Length: 246
Image (cartoon, rainbow, N blue to C red):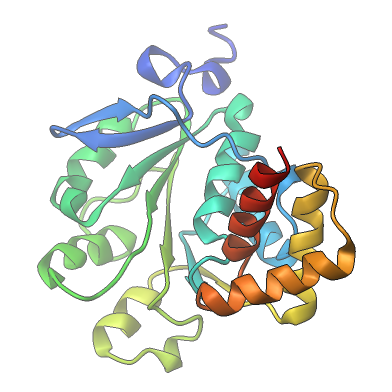
């Protein structure tokens, strides 16, 4: 076990894949999302970019910080959680960071600096709506800080506001932040064909038996009511239909 401590870890990091900051301490998530990569459909190229970078981290190569941008409900956060579950046995862990936790970021980096495991510091729903001073800490940690980012750590962030192309950023703050991510992956809202493909794939996973044409009509109606086509909308519909069937 000691010879493979980089895969097993120790202490609270041994048995838990995901963590949050509570009362200024790193604590495990009691009931983490167990979503698997095999359960996700679509966005294969986007996910492969995240997977390849994560593999580089696990193998000790130079991994990049990653910005997952795009429309809401397209699976950005789900992709990150699924990647962590996939590589948990190889020593990967996730620490979720909120905007309120940003002042603690340098201290969090110090706490995990010498840990044999590999860590994703994950910022979900990153925005630039307020607290620019706190976001300055994030920009500094991404690039430009006196303290270097630990080699066992990468920063992944999901945002519905920050665009894929730096030139498309609406403000200097967005440009400055987006430019500090070495990899930017965009999850765009699916077209009708892709959305229906998501729906059929999820129906098969849930064992839902329904006429294909009726299912597609229900999917289109649900998307119109829920703000547009997205993998999230497809999942919500299938869960509702499965509950009724049961």
